[in-house]
Length: 305
Image 1 (spheres, rainbow, N blue to C red):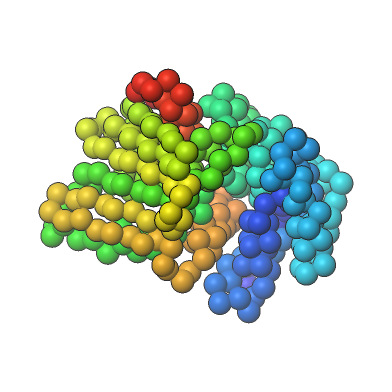
Image 2 (cartoon, rainbow, N blue to C red; image 1 turned 180 degrees about the horizontal axis):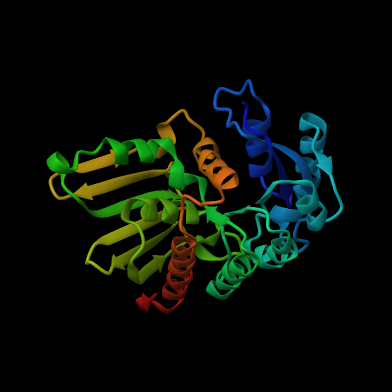
């Protein structure tokens, strides 16, 4: 007996992710098609004070309607009523709490695209709402599940290579005034760092210049992880993973599998089972890492998480 294909809804159509995700989910002929759900409804949304949001809503809304036959509706609540699970896609992390507050009472599983929030307070409020309404939630960047990273991690032999003792991750980090520092695009490299080291960071020190950000995190067990965000030169994603007996290099951008496909495979696990593959507590810590990094960049001092 074939499993039911879930009806998926999208809220806030102001990021390229909405088209990329819909193509992977709805086009069964796509070489990296992700099965199990189809995007059937979307609410345009958008943030009127953020150019990267309001300038793109019309085009992406038109794409979803005309290319993929997605029904465009008038409210986040209507998306929740029509669908089995929801992708909250607003490029503006500041908007996530208010949008989630509208749909949480429907009890449908929700994936919240990066950044989960732009303050720890907003992130904690969403977790509380999810618990109140028993809503399965998950939030992360696509780079956490990028095949170029996960395959390197899976290929390591702990007997031969030893345990992971540190990591250095890098990627492009253009800035957005409304979501400062690493919240906008730098979060991708922070997600890679957490995919490698896991939670447990206790302190962050960050130096920021016109062409880069460099964040150094100290973990509770003494491990050190770094994030280099580039605004000049290399705009690829990658990681250097340090082990007790060896070092692995992951050229994450070189892998042919789209970053989004690996992410959607994990999101569909949550949508089908109600259990998120990634603990929301780790996403909370990651938001606090970025918040602390931004504070350190301004003050020049280490910041405790």
